[in-house]
Length: 435
Image (tube, rainbow, N blue to C red; front, side):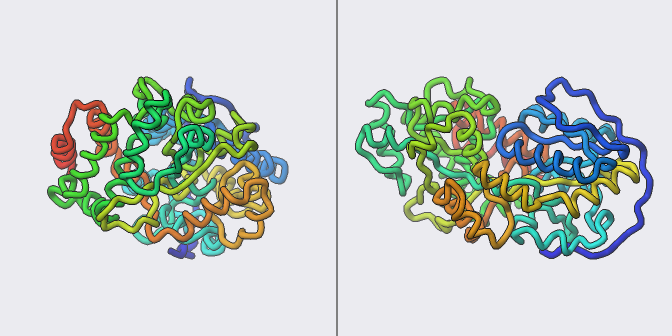
């Protein structure tokens, strides 16, 4: 969707009160005279975001940003509290979807048409399907700041060779692999269950493969009984079957995704497969470059489900992460944000950095650059997966309002652990509709 082109007069707002957060994992550069700041996540594309702000500080020192980086789970809690208390940073790192709509409805973020002189030209940098996740009611409130993040099925080629197997193309093939890996003393799947959100990828893909995106669309629309759609119930049943069959490494509920302990199971030959967003590749590349250089890391799409109505080319994950501008920012901070978003975001240097880091920028016309990288097969796979998907479904914990998302992750954890049956899980989620 194209950005609007209206230009509104900036109005002054109260100064931002920057919270001192004990969960901060590092800073990048001093803020300029404007006092502008930004918070972002560690891991993944952190290097590119740091470099982008460092380059901007060299070019425009009077509008430089003080940048802090936080672990994923801690950030999600802190940003929610900070926005509510009027202490958000100038640039707010987010995922779009339900959380962005909440910020818009509460007048906590500004439309880009209030910030940018020519917001349409800025928007033309990005793939429309990715840009659209930052749109609320026809107005753009957030712009992509890092690589596209479809969820990919990674696998350890050496472990598959050990049992003379191929990566699964169907759900039945996936289930048939479980006893073979377990008998060989290899966990079929790595999982950071302590973080809860990695479990959501399984439910999303299964629901989409079985029923198509319309099933979750009904949830977003608040239709009564939407969580008890037959596709939801069957997907929940399949998750229970997967867990009961020993699909995940023992003790997965004590493994935190933020620490990288889940991906380490893949490259240390403890687990054969790993379902995760494409942000995992840069992290693995940084932690275990030899694993990638040796060609042992493989990747493929999520398996098909026999008889399913969903298009097997559909994907789930995050189209990207996004910058929104705090409505509590001062005039000087807004001007710094406008300048950076117009001239410092997703520059050629940023695109190059993302590709070198193993991420795929959400911009069009980069096929030649993809082929010139040291990982052309992987990067082209992700680019084609994301740009050609008939439907790219945002992670449900970001697509839903925060209160529903919290209950989803809690109930899903109980489904995985067997505290809730498939029917009980769906009934518990139906009770959240309309909240």
